[in-house]
Length: 285
Image (cartoon, rainbow, N blue to C red; front, side, top):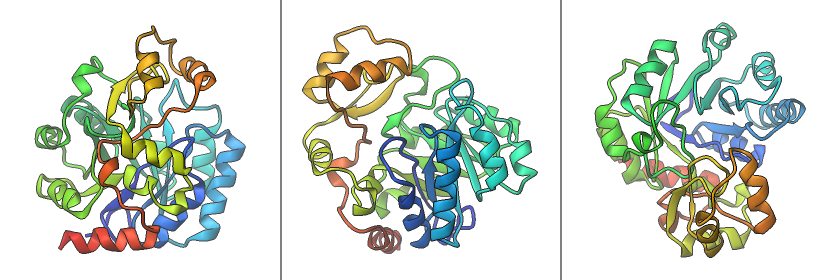
């Protein structure tokens, strides 16, 4: 089964401020769909990242941005001009039509069945179903944060859309991908699993923290709810009133490092990207 033109139904989740663009190229070359995390990049940096990945792979890859009002100025124009195979977004809605007119497939992030239905009505080509287990920021854009904290299996069972659904949240092995497919997903998006590859270049300290601590969903890190390792520093920040997103992240950074991750970090394998993808595919059988 392929997805977005990739050989395998596996998408590498975009990990803003953590992954280099080259990770996307490595993933796409391995037969999955690599993703450029463009949300924290300037327009010029995003253009350079897209061209770097395109020079390193002939396979399809995607670009991810935050939806307005969090989208950086001119970033969407860069995507329209550079025309990656896939564009994905989170935190809200982006009109897919201008992108689709340029031949770009569009995927939006949903944390509830209602959000998935709204995305389908908006015309997206696929819905990324972000379960409660997912690392990083929550994509909830309708209702309360609590409404959007739905376990992945429950979320997949509740979504009723005609477009493909990509399951995201806590998946780090082929068994997890297989369960998602059995629940009706067309593919799976993995972030934490690729975080542990050498191509991602995450410092040893970061990985060790993710192996040591459980995770928690809190706005204390950036001002918007997200899942991260529950370190003593994060515990300290959780006792304080956070500033609005994204101002809180600047304050948190002054206090020390914090580490986003999904719930599957302790089970993630430390393998090169090409080997990891082949292991995931073999485990699907």
